[in-house]
Image (cartoon, rainbow, N blue to C red; front, side, top):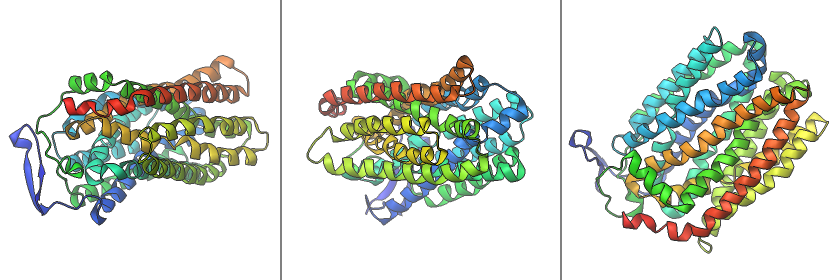
Length: 440
């Protein structure tokens, strides 16, 4: 077995680790997947706990829905996406596990700072800090997992990693609601933020850096790609452009609902954050995690016969998502409405593993973290940035007591239809675009 080598065009960043390289797809690869899965849980607990706390924060700090939309949307998303590009370039040239550990410490500390906020400005600055910290996690994690797992298992591995989103959101809903009811919204930020520092040590001390491209069993160029080169290459591929737009419009729905559905049930169904958090915790965790896994598992098996299978799985999931969301928003009984949110969560997450796998397959190994960051930039600016913000603006613009119902209904139907259309367009050139990296 060969020693693990971290390659870089800069000699001072190159290093050789004396331990033998772990087997691709072996037991240690699954350990790394498990560790990164837990990191992603922390990522989304700290990112989305704000959603279950919107109403008590609104009442305490006396701010509008538009301002809350900014806190949950652009205050996070703009800095998350713009910081993600240089951090992903660093990940393609430096030690990825160390970058993930440093990022985890940063966003955990800023989550704690959120609980110490004295007003809107303090909370906005803390959210910006969380966004910058979390920007350094997913691109290097995608790159690591793509080296640890072969192409034929990549959608499943990335889907399992992505399921950490929904476990994290579910835990955030439960912990945030329960702690808010018992101790107040500030304590919730403190409790969920502090454990991330210990998790960062586990990442740094136990995750080994693999040879880049080892899952393809081929030599990898040591050259580094610039942000401009990655953007140009990704934008030159029709499948890349359309995948980014499809993910962005579907994330518009996901983040819009993920942020405002707690306020919807608190305002219109008169549930407490603690009661609602208990419901949403298992619905989000079970529905989201199972949907993400199923999407990757089905796509990895179907793609052996149909090269466009990953796009088809994504498009079907988006379309099936629509009727369940409509039912959840319109039903008068809060229990039935919440139960309809379970299949909606399953369908809305089928796209994650297949789409992330396509992005990793479209770019060469030395561009994987950057490719992931470019894709997430497009999806996050449209989805995380605009989704919560637009719903908040629509709530204030409609101005009626049940305005939030119609805001969510409009966003779910229109944006999901756009997403399905862009997934279909991506499939038209996918086979040809997968060969483009060979010309670099």
